[in-house]
Length: 307
Image 1 (tube, rainbow, N blue to C red):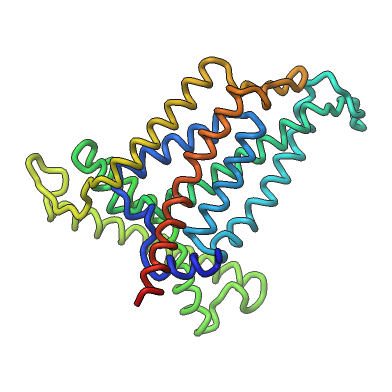
Image 2 (image 1 turned 135 degrees about the vertical axis):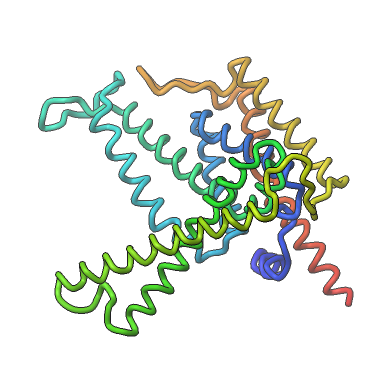
């Protein structure tokens, strides 16, 4: 069932990405702040699972597989390094050869930090897929035109640079100048040549972009721009849900709900009513893209079956 829905939605633009940029930006602001600053293990688990589900739905299995190649070693590294340098905690599990204690609290905190870091990276990958450069320019073009242009260029720089690197490397490989050809010295020279080509291309591309935007009058006072984004009833409904759920989480956190301490000993709230309310609100707000996309997929499948 899930595979059929995913296949149906993949043939069209997903519902969450079609929302007004204001709605998407407010959503990611709430989600990223909650993922970074709520260290309750239940919230961290919710953020990690929901971010992975959204990344899988929006970016596909290949993109998530590529992310996991870097995320899993990074998580393992963070989880292992923290107990080595952090010796706080009252529950001593043993001692390192150099005499410092290994505590249960530092181990658990390292795992929590690794989960937080991985979830933030996955949410940023979803953000990069949804908040395209044209949305970013539309959102901040009138307020901070120079910064919005710079950020939009930065967001598209990494994937564009990666594509150009592959193109340059394939071209060099055809003439026997790839980094895998020849002796070590020759490989180094070939690598330097490829990097030099990429740097020259990126600088030339930046100059061309700047000249193009200047010739179009970008940033001038009174300049108008065409916009394909409209704020409809669905945008209002989703934005209202995001703000209400986000505000509820903030108010509950201010009252001390879902508080959790790792040092000097592990203690916190995970079962009382207020903490459960925080978990429900966090899970609901983080699942909004999945809910919208699954609903759109079911609707699309129903319309196809009616033909």
